[in-house]
Image 1 (cartoon, helix red, strand yellow):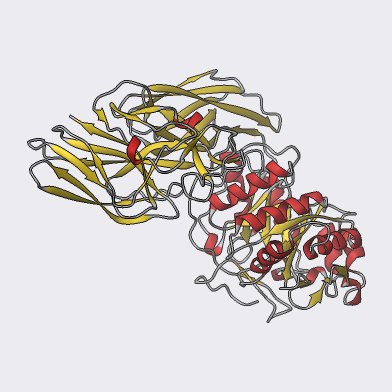
Image 2: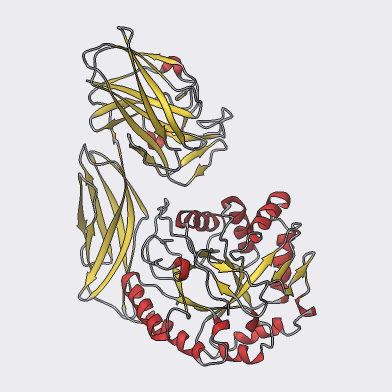
Length: 591
């Protein structure tokens, strides 16, 4: 077997080495938390103990099929299905599966379909085909095909996977091993199509948790139950990935994988037992059967995982993101789910709270507990990863949630809100469910929700008033000057970048004595917080609105900026940057 090159991505193609496969290293995990209610919770059925394999599943496969079906593994993951530019499917560049939407696998390996069925006469309960690898091409071709043809019955992708399902009825699921495309729109469409054809879908992740969380959420929103598990690579470049930290898909379980080149069966059982104790994983997988074909280790590794995930205990489930406001209390429900005959009393504790926020827990010892997060009027705004730990004797389980603290909702506060009426030129705030053709805040039809934003906010005591709902409500900057007056210590903005981050933008405060002060400030895009110097969270929103009346259910931001003024002088005006992608929604002068 070719050794792993840790400078490369995770699933390596083996089309140039048809008899062996190698898994290459993943890039570092990028943690982000999405906006759904989820936690580490028990799957509706026992999770799967999976084994990835390539050629051994179809070349001279009889003895290998017998070994795996009697091994104790419950999921056989056949890797890697390649998708070419015209939509034909091929296993590892050496085993054509479809051509023109027709199954042709029997021309190369006539016993393949029957061998897949034979696997399920033993311990294997699920057959999964894995698409993709570290090679660029598979998901780029899927994107191009989806964009060109869609995913309806006349599309080549629909025909391909319908043909596979018809030729191999034992085929249950498709594993999505996208390591370089990360195009959510086409992947979601593809996943929904697979669900409609009767497949389950399992993302195969090694990084980019925020991307995969959104993909899982959107697929299951359109085709409920389609994504029923996530294969998480926790070895080589994915080493350090922990299914209990940062990989949280709600009722969709995470099944972590380890590699035999790094871990013996004993080490696998120890590691998986730790994860099971921490967050109740219900399954896992091994990479790679090709390494230990016929030497007896298949049964040992299967037993290691099965033993690790079969003990007694409990798991926790709660919201992935809790949206809180200054000077208010927000509740989060946490569910305790028992497994393996556990009937103990679970006590919750909360750690890593942001400054100005306290947590109170009610329902201790029950299976339905509530955490009340109370934020002061000056609580630190922004996103904080909060750890919730459940303890019963020596058994512990943890989940992480993102606590998003925003400015308070209110009508009174310090400062003088600046009247922006004459400068309002964007329709940036709409009531939920509204349809409109104004282009919204960003010119692409998206807008803030007035239901979430409310008419006014109070940030650290300073009052900000927003423009009217369903009308001109934001200022797209074009170098214009906004009049204001008075002597003040600071000027505060609620603003954002659109169409990407907007770096080193110049805001100019003009005084009545003819002098001026320039402030250079970078602004994050409203979807991706860059946490630039001088930028803090103003309002975090659980979604934004689209012009067809629907919601984009991801987290979006409105940021706060503060510029120090010369209080000995009288302010005359503020000149905005000459950049339409800098959008201002509220301005307040602070005494």
